[in-house]
Image: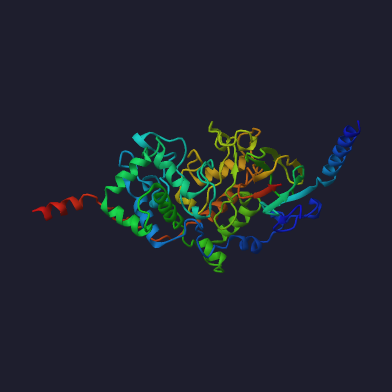
Length: 349
Length: 106
């Protein structure tokens, strides 16, 4: 057979399609698109194990993963700030201010391209990026292996998580990625409403949901249960950062384009946008209402919305229903690495 | 002279056969997805990418076998690309990278 087409058969002509526009869907039809998934996806080449997640959690909060031994992944991705840092833009090695806002790591198990500009295609890749970046954690990866091997408890943790393999950079990345996939926003009032509890959210929030999917057109990008389609857009912010345009310079639409973030727990994650330039959710909605800087790369989804003040408030009420009732995150007890020295001295005595 | 004529006839036949076999397939974008995940083609075949979505797309490939960028494609628009080289070509939408199509050109 000369040609083989896999999957759904190719449809011959576009004219046969009549997509249902946002305006034509009922509230119940929209609600059906926001049902939470029942399980967390893990890749086949890095399946979940309790031991791997435990090791990943320990590494995530260990500042010795940085060159200066005082910055952990959790320094910037702080669970108390919805797994961000609450700052306009982060601080890296030597307290140097970084150029972009620290993104949350919530719900990354469902993402494929990572970072604001997609520079990494898996969480395993991404886990090593900030550790090795000289402006972030500034850690030589080979030296990190040596440092971890000198800590007996880490040798044990790695051997349990990766039998017959032990400490390696690849396994460190797998462990952190596995842990990060467990960082999932818990059930929010919005989810209870989707599940059928009509009293879970206010009438203002319900009106906000209608606006979100209708007039305000937020769902063009912030769609689905995780409130993102992982797309990249230039939304017209007036800064010089070229975003994904530096990764795909030949594609005009990627100039000033950044990844669409989840809106889960969004009210806890200000200030907003890739540059942290907007202080609160009203400022964000006002930006979209006005549609941003006109330039060739500006997303076609950016159009004046003509929202009233009351509609903006309803949208904010709705966004607040996405804040989940998360359990406190207990910090792991890190391998001390020095206790064995004391033990050895006692044995020598 | 006879040999030259034979070569010419053979070349014509080959050219005619190649032309006849080149086909154009349509891949449709809807709901931020391609309607298929994989397709196998012969060298010289084309795909017409049709945007039946509500959203603007930008189909491209960075594959070594064939790099291309169809640019911004508004709803209702179609753009075609001919695959000139054998190999595997990974096609994506730059705006919606979860839209992926594997093209095998033989």
